[in-house]
Length: 351
Image: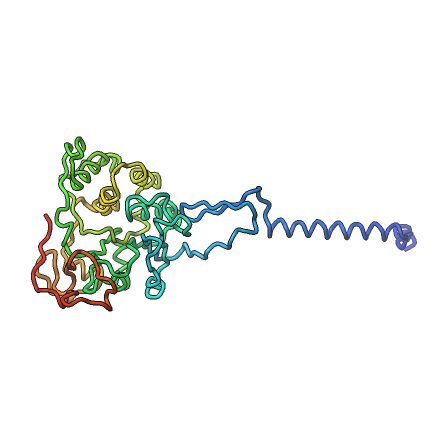
């Protein structure tokens, strides 16, 4: 063992303890900075986060709020087009199984908002698709922000039962499902088109829509012949599957939105252009009007309705007077309002 002793000679010297102390201090210093590196990443002078289409810039990292929890892997997304003052509490209270993306089109300080308040709900829908293209839910429902809407296909114009009854398995099978089954407004034909419509925009709103559609049809639907008639139940409320949304490239949805951003047409025109073609964007024929009886049964499970024709079933939908909801509905319900109280007459269809 004597040959080992020289290796330990002087192991208790002050110099050796001094070196060991410095080594320990250096190790602690390095370890601490490694921890800081992983828990507080080095960034540039300015910090930003992107929420939807919104970029918020701060000059100090301490001002960056924690991101709102968003389950982007959810099976169900509810895409809501609204305005700053709209009451959307009804969504969380009644539809807890849906992850809501509530856009405030007129509030650029909102968590979610489109790049411009143009094109009505179309701008919101396209912004959601563009921003979430790689993380879409299996089923996305697109609708307006108010619970009670004159066009909601429900005896009380209530959006809650429409979403609660929706057959999401059918959405996966069909790819696209309109949330209105009645043919009142839109079916069997909403608008007629010809190549000449793209040459003169006319003077009224209807002809302006025809002009914008005909002029942009080749860009909207490359290598597709423009149909002579387009028809589908109004009014831009529908469900689509992830698979069918992705049949079109993200760049195509950007081109759709570019039309809204650059057009000189007013919101009523540009928004309605997309209202007329959502079903075509998601793979349905130009005239897509399933029989109301089949639609109510397959989409909502309402299979016992008595239907008076291809596009109407008794007791399910009647257009409200004035095409708007009275203040305080449904607690404030004027006499004769609601399907049960309205006159029993067949509502005609466009076309």
